[in-house]
Length: 62
Image 1 (cartoon, rainbow, N blue to C red):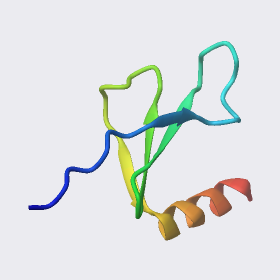
Image 2 (image 1 turned 90 degrees about the vertical axis):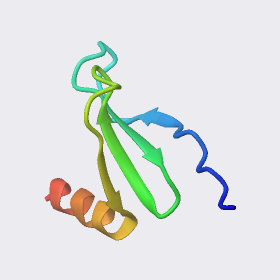
Image 3 (image 1 turned 180 degrees about the horizontal axis):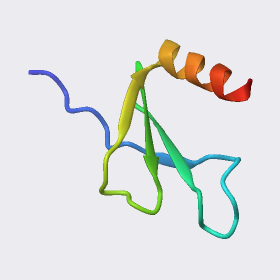
Image 4 (image 1 turned 90 degrees about the horizontal axis):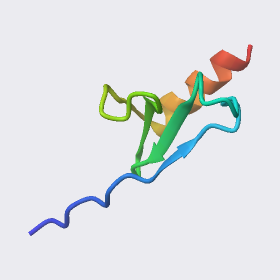
């Protein structure tokens, strides 16, 4: 029997504002990174592999 994955631990981006708006949260899911809007924690989540996440961050920094 395969073990259930642990419940995601979400952390707020260091670039999120302290006023609570424009907050992005990330969760480490092993080989996958998940991204969500902290104002809508039950809403959609974007999941991508670590390589794709690294490419996304590099693109956003340009």
